[in-house]
Length: 249
Image 1 (cartoon, rainbow, N blue to C red):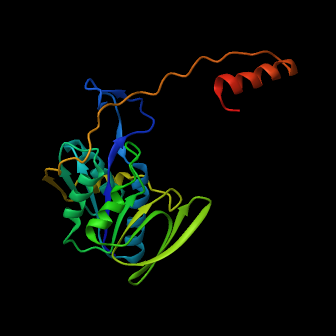
Image 2 (tube, rainbow, N blue to C red):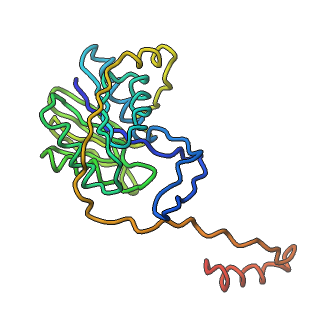
Image 3 (cartoon, rainbow, N blue to C red):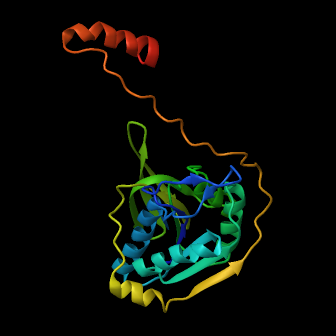
């Protein structure tokens, strides 16, 4: 099975970020960047299927600045066979990114195109569906279970209050959710092997953005807590504070 996995370089969720001087971007100084965690489920799924079949290829594709090569190398260290970096200044516009990915994927031989369900930086949750639309392929999102039999696939999707089971033909686009598998850590052998695997870098120009990111703001600092009293006597004051000040009752 030939699988293409689209990954994104994002700030580590444990990193404390600062807003840049322009007020509309993150200050990269001191920020640790990683492969988007949801994309790791997609990578793991592709690698396992190749290992189980004993044949096929896994190609990792990413869009972003030249520093994104580090994330692609991590995908190669996990077990991907080839990497492709579409080098550009980056964009918050999912339509522009999806068109670039679809243009790169079109014409390649593949059975599956895998994504994480969303990136943890912008949380747009749009690129997998847009790529499927541009390629004219079936699309299954938020997938926590995937079975493939010949040219057909059955996916179990996580939906509000339960699971939904759908069937579709291949090739197709699938976006993965936590629970599909447990991503591996790159081994020392994998890290060394990744240095010899092909990583193609292509300079691209993204389409004009369909919207403009005007500004970023940090969440307001939480108000200081206060003690309203002790014991049962404090209950009326606590209820009044929750109702009149916090507005949660």
